[in-house]
Length: 546
Image (cartoon, rainbow, N blue to C red; front, top):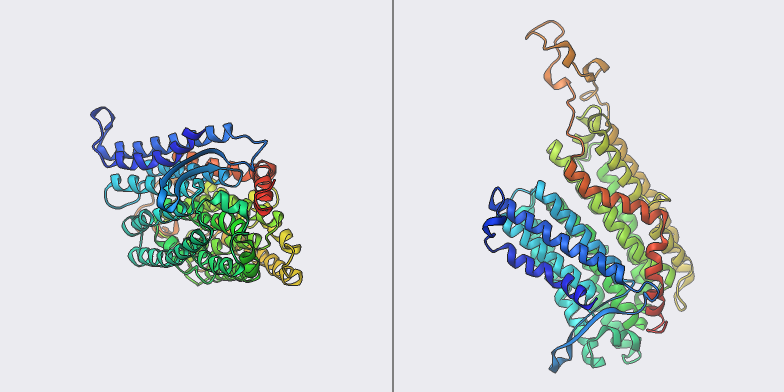
């Protein structure tokens, strides 16, 4: 188990180095580009298998206990240790990261985004995976910070070199926001380490803030919380996200939404809740207020983008929806209750599955239509997706209703539990205030349903405007009639036909089916995830006591 966890963290990094080396003659395949893409699929597949084996070997009877631990002294002068371990909180995030990265590598093997060398692309994706996995596995504050920062450079280059329009500006905005937030976060981490005498997250969680004064905890929560809030992203520190998603390649958007945003919320749960509980209690009402503003703001922004004539970009709309969904996660954390925190962790995983699938689908739609503009997709496509690529349209509708929180799918449980947690927050928090936040959050779910249903109606069903309305005869295939003579009376212009689009391809089905299946599984059997997180959360909130 110790070896497996170390392998899961280090193997992608070694694979990134190997990706930059010349491929052995027997592995080159048709060309070197294909060889390096196959290398990416192989490495991420091996990491996924190792993570699954790690999950199978995990002691599910004691999910609150740190398992597969490695603890080696690294910098004795600062008492910094290479300390790794997993519990019921971090294991699902490891599995989500390994799965999404593998699916992105598989998708890229068949649909590589336009850009420079495939070698660099594969190496950057593997470095990104290593940094994300390390963030969820390390148990030392300074190592957490290093892993947290490790993902910034590869994501910057994925956006700047393989992205679409305005990619340079979006990449710079992403790196500047996150780096500035990280500088403040580092100050908070150093404050905790110097005042407590250790950077060990397990020891600090067990101490439960008893070795830190209230003023130190308040300053630490403010500093670290800003850095985590930028990555989450929390309103009003979210403005880098829509630009980054709009410009990023498909796999970049999937990884950004699916796993990178989870690093911020994971930090709130793993670091601030157990290490500085008094500081968290001070800021919890403000965190909840920002969270519900983000829920409503994100939904209103999506409604504005979805309306006819707004020229809204579908990728940008899904990005704004992430601001709202992550608001539910932050609301659950702010309640400081087992119910709310479990809901936040469940919503984390559900968002990674559903929004990862949505960005895959939007990328495929953009590849087929050449645009993600909603007005173009809705108004100039005749029968739209249901008529032109029915399987793709059906899967987009499925992902949309999962995102709006339909009962029976993964999106439902996280939002419901966070609202339940807000109804009865932790002792010392204002119950009337949190019930107000609960009501605002519940209103946000209605707005989410509104914009998602508008998207389904417009993109999947289309809109019959004077410019796009076709008669039944025009929409019918005419292959059996044969070509009409040029200039014949009643001949239809070529633009009047509605050609079929390529429906879901085999490689797309392979990349998307696991996400759809897990969305259904988590919705129908939430105990699979809650059985892991609940004992660990209970112990975390109790100061390390089971």
